Image (cartoon, rainbow, N blue to C red; front, side, top):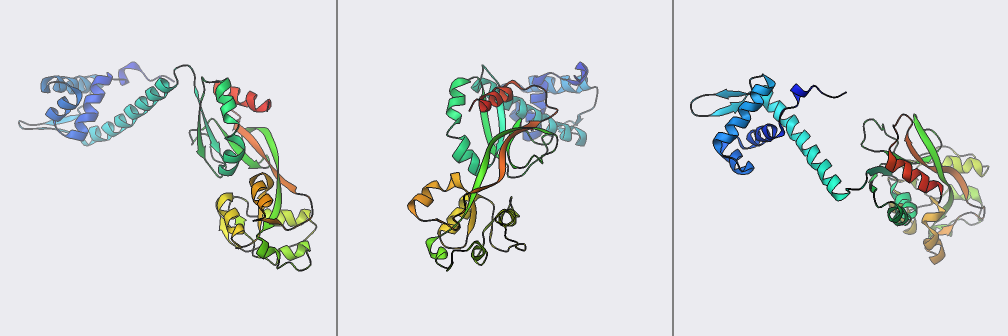
Length: 293
């Protein structure tokens, strides 16, 4: 709902207030804005009259802001910064909009990033901004139009587009593999197990699919696959890792599969966006592009 016009003062007066709150000096504000002292004083008086609210405490030697005006100036600064950022984004991309996308780091680097140049080539009018989020979040509280989600359809109030199923394999260094004398699946759980923070039950779910019952396994905890893979390579334990992340490591032999069973899927990657979101053209273009991949 638009704000009444009487509550939207001239931006020149707001800039004078923001500068004065920082400098505490009319002369310094004038130098910053390229105005004379009298012009700055007029802008500040315009703002006070416009709001019909006292903003300043004046005496013969100096002028200071009231406590309420100080708080107001901080909000004005934030709004001016937002306007500046919006203008910068418009200047950087004058023909189109932007898509703020929350991604999972490993999937974003290995799967999405190599494909993005094709989208950019097809839609140069759209600027894609990528940021990392490891867990589902409230779209109303975060500046994202869409996100990449792994697992099941358990993110509330969003629409889903499945991108791919993820196949995982249990791996370890060749040294750790030698500790498995008989090559049985149950021996895997005698090794130190490495865990991902966002998938705390991955080993249990994998064991169930393999027909093995285990209690909640203990072991080192990692926030990203990259660090967990390196830990496995250096002999710190067995890791349950998506196959697309370790093709090179398996080929080079620095990691070895611990089971002859085929890789299994314990979840999928989804492109998600708020169910109640109004049509956002950059997001819609990105969704259609994903559907054609």
